[in-house]
Length: 128
Image (cartoon, rainbow, N blue to C red; front, side):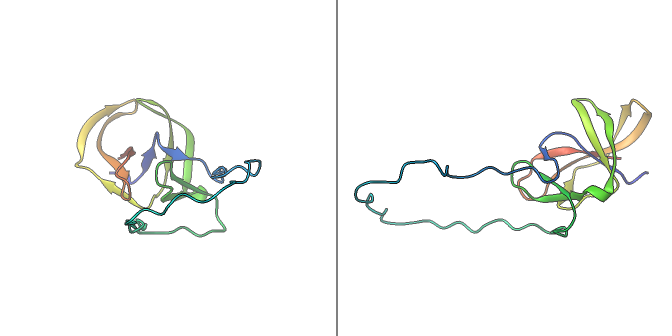
């Protein structure tokens, strides 16, 4: 079995701008602040299993921004999946794998397993 991963939807391209949480043109708040809530719940942030080097361009999960692959591991952007364009990678990190099953792809019969983001459980694609 070839060890290649195909990521389809829910993938951020490398170095995509994240956008600003607050606009620099927003008017400043005037007046007293609202009262603080009686109890504040602080949730523990989810951590990734693997962080990829900052000097490389990398692909991330669109939902939780978990690192998935370095640009150097990209084999093809012209790969075709059942839901449209897909990217073929040599290796990925922070993904979980479902059970393997036989599927007929454009290139024939393959043992294929769905993969999901290990952090937020979003289905990312498949591996074969």
